[in-house]
Length: 256
Image (cartoon, rainbow, N blue to C red):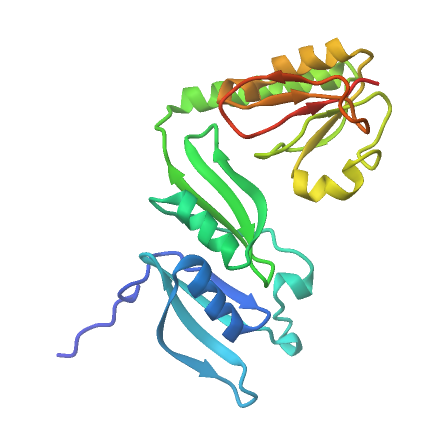
């Protein structure tokens, strides 16, 4: 009697990402350099030479990919707009893995940092526009501990919003800056060209430098070992105050 085929083939898990990429041959080489991928078997090509199917292995998991095929509506994020999907990698040496990815040409979307849920975590994007999160679990936290941190952030945001102080913002990432200024927008001052590099900001409406410092001191980020720098926006920092901590993240506050 012949052996029954396995519903889940050997080497596969229940979930396997399947990516559409801009240039499959280049993508395979990029994933080798960036994530240590290995090509499994051969590459199936169509009559025009395009990659119809390729199987890669990263760590203990598989990844399938193929070239763009616009005639069938198959486009990579860089051609089709954007992607709401992030592929997650857990690895023992996350700092080395993150450096390897960026050295290979991956673009940093969220700098590597210790996160409140217990992971050291960062996000990059590849040349096709796919996002990859890279992490190592560094601290075991209970659901109650995680919820406490989330509640602290929510309370801080909600209070500033209710009082009319919070005017605009994006989630702060590592190396981010908290921008505080009365009635200004993020396109003012030095941030018009550095917004992408900053990765996140808050624009608040305050009246004095001391008020900016007080808001920064109340930010839950300080509890996570974050360095806070308070300074005016669009000036050569005549007023600067550092709230010392152990992380590289910065929050920049400015008086009106």
